[in-house]
Image (cartoon, rainbow, N blue to C red; front, side, top):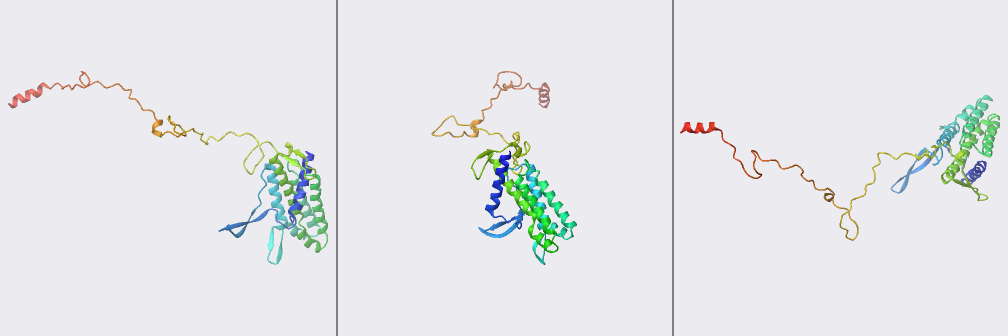
Length: 281
């Protein structure tokens, strides 16, 4: 596991250097995406940055919280009189001594939260995060100038981008199942400790590592019926041919008064009808 973490660390730092991400001024939580109209960019809208697919539920939640807290502490506010965004870190830092230590404790809590990712953080990455908040504490002790410099330094934002780069490379490796060293080219399988708990993978796509029962609402595939005659290629038989004729199994009803079927039987007349006719004569 240590070998895989070291390789992911190298790839993460290389990614930050290659992408030239401004880790102290670029928003780690929100991004602007273009909105197209008639094939052209009409405007830009701000939305939350997506979580890399393939991370466990634990890693995804930690990354989302670190991004949000870093944004609130370093870029949560804006003022018409100040052309740069600032956060709670700059406001608390205005309190002499006590504010600087309170800001340091908040930044330290952010690192401890980040270290709870599956498999832990690489030692070098953890050391870089701790160095960032120590420098921020030292800068804050400088009267006035330190408070202004703290607004631009943004240690929490730097640490959020370090975690983002590490988990992005980790998500790619988890999907591939292996990680390749960018320097030596050697390939190492991803250990299970970095994948999180069983059934906790691919939280963003809704895919889990454990087997799931098929949905009962999904209809089973039905093979279409085929005609008895085949001319060239096979064709489906009409629906009427699929229904077998229904035979009338009920025996024929006997005629009224007995007798053979088909013979008409005249019913016997009432004697009272004859008497009535005789009286009228």
